[in-house]
Image (cartoon, rainbow, N blue to C red; front, side):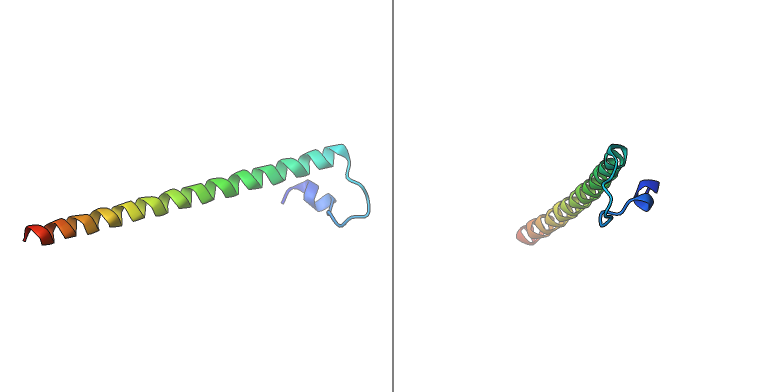
Length: 67
């Protein structure tokens, strides 16, 4: 949480200044980018794991056919 979050709460009865709004929006955008990057990394990890499992299963199936 940045200093701006400590100064202003969305439930506040006062309107935020343009500077406060700009900083709040930058914080939200940064959090969204971080969350998106983490989700993308997890997706790629899971896809890689699935590809590895499929590769193992195919190798096992080929081995059964050849035996």
